[in-house]
Every structure is written in structure tokens, then in C-alpha cells.
Length: 140
Length: 254
Image 1 (tube, each protein chain N blue to C red):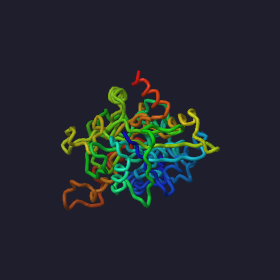
Image 2 (image 1 turned 60 degrees about the vertical axis):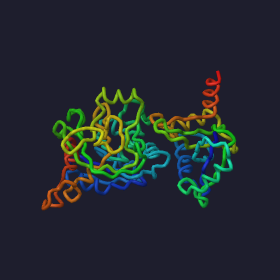
Image 3 (image 1 turned 45 degrees about the vertical axis):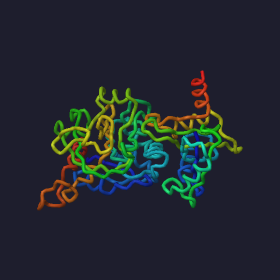
Image 4 (image 1 turned 90 degrees about the vertical axis):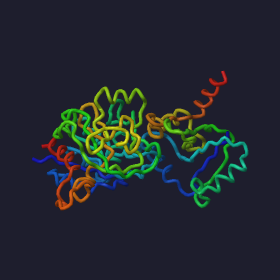
């Protein structure tokens, strides 16, 4: 499986709004990045990138930046918000950084998820810890 | 003295004028209160959160607005027993704020008006809301007849009630399902539902019945000129069916 991240290369007003709102809610975060995560069963990354960049419904070269992720799982300090209902394969990724430019620690990320980023009635929040735990359980 | 109604305006609200106009036409003393004047909300007796795209629906519909200072006053008022009525984006905000169905803590949503299904597209459709509770169960619907049909316009991309099976069961068993989508003859079935909403839900109330959240817009069917079934020749500026819910709201305040 390949995971592709599509983010804005223009200023991301939604990420900035989330940053301001989270600070007001007492979450200690300095910077936020947001991207859309798309999951594909493809094996050939080059062919996949060519296909996506040719599809103007999901990629506008004047507006978007695209990258193929090394692995289809969230990085540290990042949460993937996935819809619980529906058949879509993908998520919105939120990456939170502290004042030193490092990914925030787990308690900060969890606070951000609980207070704003995830509505548990309709969303599932997948963090690196959860991902590793679930996959370890599957392996066992 | 007449009860004073505030229609709070968030950045991105867009249905505030017709909401205030219909409240006034129904005899209410309604005013707009912008987000920059939030503390003034404490002096009002009731709140109507109108439709639009508060904070551009960033993150999720209603998610940022639910944490706005405006909502501090609305939540405090609701807990005090003031009437709170949310329409469309206003309803989404009330769910994000946890005021309806109100089965969890404040500002911890237990349900949402999520993206429409099966297609996650915007719908604009004339609909009927059927009252599914005893009218007196909710102060805002108390003056409606049992099983009342209220015409309105559904105009949203995120109007599908979504929650866990347990929460949906609670919504039914504890009497939170205020309105279901229906046909003009009162039949309630899936064909009447424009958005795939669970329980065919068009509106929810809280436990104490002073907070009502509905997705369709009765204020867009508030006068004959925007009522789809208007017989020709009617006075175009006369109130039409959607005004009934607003009149009931005003009556509850008097």
C-alpha cells in the first residue's frame, strides 16, 4: 500500500485557525501542518504520482504539494483523522510542533485531539502509538 | 416586558437577516449580536443560531464556533434554562458544543451532523419536518399540534445524523428525536430523507427540552413567496408554513 500526502503550498488558513483555537483551549503548540492523506493499493510510486498529478480533482500544481510517504502510518506528533462511516480511504493529517520545532509529545497531541481535532461520534483518531499497537496486536 | 432574542453572528454566518425578520414578523423582539459583542449576549432571554458557515466550517462544520466566546454565553444560558434554537449551521454548532442531544459533557460531542450520504454532496430540497415528540416535551414546539408538519428547505452538505449505535438508541429511548423528515402527507420514510440521516432525523432536542437543533431552514419557507406549495394568488408577503415553528418559539417566550 502507498500513502500520498497532499498539502497546500499556499498559506493554510484552516491549519492557522486550528493553531489559534488550540492555543485558546490551552494546548501548548507552536505550529501546525495539515495535509490530506490518500491511500492506494498501488506498488509503483512513480506511476501513482503521475496519475494523481494528472487528476485536477485532487491536485492543482499551483496550489498543492504532493509527496509519497515512506510508510502508510502517522509520524510522531501527528494524528490522522479518519471518518468512521463511509467507504473512503484516506484521512486528514495534523502535525503539531512545539516551540523548538520538534513534534509535540503524546499528551499534547492527545489534548489537541480530544479538545478540537476529532469528533469521536464520526471520526477515528489514529496516532503513531495507536497504529503500532493495533498492528502489533494483528501480528500477534 | 417582551423577551429579547439574540441571533448571534459568527464570522461566516449567512442566514441571520431572514431569521431576525421572521422572528420579528412572528412578534418577537430579535436582534443581531456579532461575535465582537459576545458579552452582550448575557442580557438576552433566548438565542437563535442561524445558518451559514461559521468560521468557514474549518476543521468540521461547527467545530471552531462551538469554542467561540459566543458559545460560552449560549451554553451558560441553556444551562440556566433559556431557550436555544439552532438552524442548519447553528444546529451543527449545538451538536459540536455538546448541547444536543446533551448526553455527554459540554463541548464533547456525542453525535454530529456529518457529510450527506450516500453522496457527500450539497442538497437543496424542499422538505417537511414531522414533530416526533409530544409538543410539550420541548418548550420551542409546545404550541404546535401533535405530529405537526413544518415545511422548510434543506440546504446543506453535512446534515446526516451520525453517532454510535448506542448513542442512536439513547436518542430514541430518551426522547431526543424531535423532528423526522416526512412527505407532504405526513408519511415518514427513507424517500423523504434528503441526506441519509440516521433515524431519518431532521432535529434533536436536549434532555430538558429547551435546546432544539434542526438542519432544514423553516425561515426559508417563512413567507408565501418562498413556499413551494403556495396556491397562486396568495398574498406573497403573508407568513407561510415555516413560520409556525417560529411562532411556537415566540409563544414559549411570552
